[in-house]
Image (cartoon, rainbow, N blue to C red; front, side, top):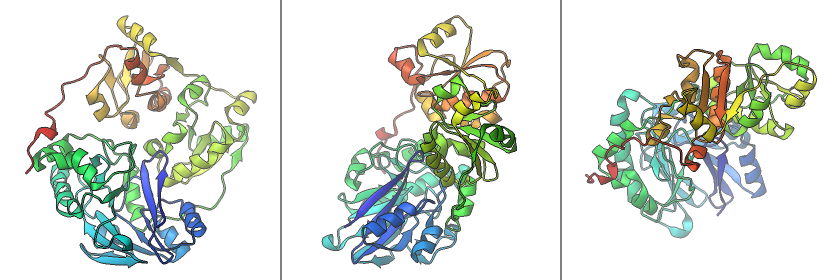
Length: 467
């Protein structure tokens, strides 16, 4: 049996291709760049016959329609209206056979109203469930967030999710392999494990949803404060149609002076690491490191924003453009030819950004010479924080610029320095002139055993009795 998990860098998104016997294959939750599925099928002598969608997806754009057009495959969903266009709509408990493999559809609402899971039964093990594609219902060591469809119903949705997992998925047997739509790094869960592989039996021993009561689980979900990027609403709309084909035109390389003229039409995103960006960057650029593009570009651009890219090396261009396309950002109008070195050699203006280290930052804080801004998310800050630091999540920063004098010295930090690089570039665009990135972030701070506040944690939901 052929099986492969495909991971989208920076998004924590998983899709799957499964050979089902008799040369037939299925793909689950395909991303927009479908070439890899086509290549895998071709190289393994497989015909893609079905494309399963577990839910409409909020954090990336589907490739279902493009893959169906390329292969003639049927798109399979549940019957809920939020699935939009599909060829086969399955009810709870309904079966579909692909090759020699049976799939049983399970309605698992909670993360979203339409969420589905698909249990797979292979020929060689008969009535024993081999694995289940859980979408965003059940992750490794976590569950999907329940605030996206309606924040006012976060608690109610958490109860629905709990019931879906206990009444539908938990019955499949401890041997069942778990194949979620997301892994670590996804915005769709708060504590997803770094492990990719798990079974239902392992989850019953380790996952909070199996170790606490329904009420305590609902309390936990209400307390779960996760960022919601603005591009999510656009993904919901386009995914009702199975996603859009990617534009076929290539990316234009712009020489420095042409780049200088054209960049006024949109925004410049500099994809270099934060320390390189700090050394020399084009004025008014945003700094979003290469692997951070899928998660953070959607905070500063939408589908109509013309984007001009600066990359560290030409080989990074494909990854940058693909990462943007996965979240529906197609308007890459040009890339700076020769990078920042070519810009500098043409005598064009560039700026610098301050950097500091943990020891220096601590010493300057003691002398009341600086303000420190923490741009991590709420969940991270609740775990530990630098005493006396301010807090604004990096995704919200442009809308919530700190009310400080623009001439004040401001040090920005995150966990290691990447998000702080974006935050520092936003602050510079807003007129703050004395901004520094704490390189190494909280990780370096802890390594030096510098002071930290660790707020008292609420009662552990694991201590609740199960209902």
